[in-house]
Image (cartoon, chains in turn orange, purple):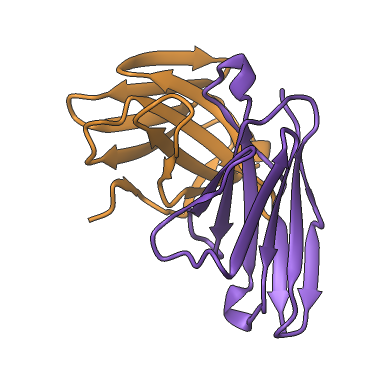
Length: 111
Length: 117
């Protein structure tokens, strides 16, 4: 069983839709949770970072962590074609330590 | 945000040759750098963790004699793929952590696409 599970998609939505991306994990030691966006043939770019359980909002993006369920989510409101990318969840047990990535979900926002 | 560069962005080489990839942190000092490889439509697989001035720590299954890592300064780490073979063809990505600022964030480079003929 993988430590981090993420549906690879692909996910296709119309412009303006609310997008929900999710990951589940099995390692209860994970405390730090991140979402990265990766455009084709580029390196990942950090979108959101959350420590322990709770919500965090940044513009159109909201990250949620539910440690009791070992479940994290990223919501994108008013999705735009420029949001089309692969979204990777990542998590670690300690600050700055090695990251364990999900497989990534490929998202396409259609104009 | 912090900037990490990689060079070259793309390299094509013949089987049996060695290839060096550079990873630089441009506006911060990276006490720790990480090297990943990524296959098409797959996630990032950590290969090794590199700390400035010390030997790299390799993940299980990664051959340290094949993937040589040097982290000689706080702004530069290099990955050398020795005697490359077609199965080494992949997207190699580095990341760097600003340890002096006590940061948790890993900043990723743009990646290097290696094709071994």
